[in-house]
Image (cartoon, rainbow, N blue to C red; front, side, top):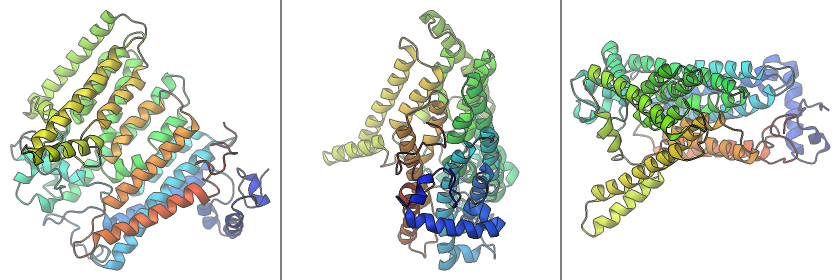
Length: 536
């Protein structure tokens, strides 16, 4: 039975057994909201409609956009149109502007996460169309992010730097962004400035095109790169729904947890990453193969490899999707040969067109010179290298050996998953193989988690406790991205601004997990309630 406070999914709150003070405050706020329509929608008053969560997420997305204008990434090169903007300067060079923008970015990111959780609860109400509501949320929440400065990462400027390398007649597989004059002012991360490119020839050709068309103006380049990012979001959304329907599953939950996920939208649209297009093209390959369009499916997967070659590990499982689960090894080998031959031909054509040929193979095999110490393998390799250096060895050489061992281990896992009998579900095993490559890599970027979620979400439903763990993990990854990726002037204390952002995020996380009467049940604070209203 509903309560006067308008919280139908928590009837025991009126009894005062839990969150009594919070309930009274919410009731007062909602009573005020009922008299002010806009406030009522933003605070959850009125009917329990998914549109309320979507409106709350829109407000959060606008906050993120505004915050990015002060602490998002923007280059300082002379070509930049906004670096000296009179409107933006107070937000970026004055302490008050930096503090306000940090608050907006951190709090907006957390509020968007809450809106996402509430969307699932509200979309589960009778009389709603969950799939339509979730699809609507993706685009409504993405619109403000189109106008944000890059957040959570500045990789987009490395994309543009590698396009500039191509335009200068150099190869991103053998030459480095740091060889270009003025590269630092153009925004490239120094971590990648002396690393080979992890991207495929198709994406590098697009990067070259973007640099040429933009004339080196970073804002134009970011806009053109964001078109690719948005296309990746659209392709992922379509492919997730299509795969769910082909396998007879409800499409709403996979779409919600993989594409509507704030971590996905903030990284792909706000962070301008090409990973969405990579995963979208991979999933498209599985869609086409499931529809018996094998050649088209391989071409889609080859395009994904030509964007980011790491997904070459998915090819064996795409081949398995072409044959029956109980097929003999001969049939599997023929599917693998066919898949490999077509993909190799596509990569050869793109290699010839770009002039890069198969340079991505040694570049991918040698990746790790920019190893992150908080990646387990990166930490282990650097530790072993340091110990070896004490004995007179070369730190980089020894660490490289450790990295190579774990790369071979990931390949061995992929091989075992592909040939084991009985064969497992191709889509799920593709996720396992890609997951092994991510975990055993010397570098793990926060958004790599997003590669894996669609494969697992489309393959099976997991226990509630697993879902809760995933939510916590997504929150922590989002927090790390917000705190680590703040563009702060050198005349400010980066440490104190980061601590301020971390305090905001941690405080709101604690509120979501333990106090908020609408979300605490999701994290197990009220174990008597289901994760979704009326659903076990």
